[in-house]
Length: 229
Image 1 (cartoon, rainbow, N blue to C red):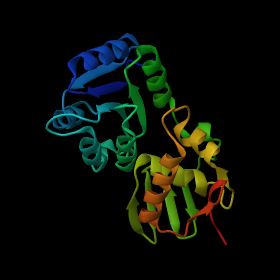
Image 2: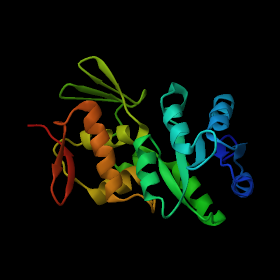
Image 3: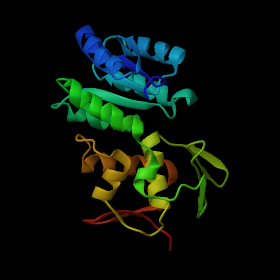
Image 4: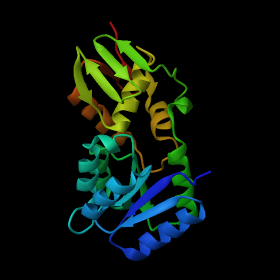
């Protein structure tokens, strides 16, 4: 079932690349390798992977910069991007989510846990969030287009990172409904063990910077809602 899904592994530690590649190949994925961020971008352009696993710290170009550059390219707008990180690197987690990471996997790598996470990530879709799957939401002066992952405000195009878009779509699908942090985490990040409340705050802040402050309201001690007066 995974034969048509392609995964690119980018890490300067070749033993880690080999370990991850072996586990993914056993699961039936097509696996490609690179050993720094610059090489990762070049390979990604050639093979158009469904998911990219990036180490944070690498020579020539680190994973954060590589992710930021790829997220600016239309061909990688919907590609899942997952970082490898040590548990002590919380600053890297926040930086990664800021540039459009979908998830984190903690080192040291445990093959069974890794495969469980990767399989879950590739199964993700908004039907699990329990929201209506309209192709477009038109609300206030916004048009939220699921097909293109774009938002329009008074005909002005706004480009969002994948998780920012999913978060906006979730909130806007039920105007004035308060979504708790737990509901948001489950709907957008599923079973990721490294995603915290701070992750939601970072994405809300980035979303407000791009679309404006007045759409998403904070309900103190509870969560967030898309507010319509």
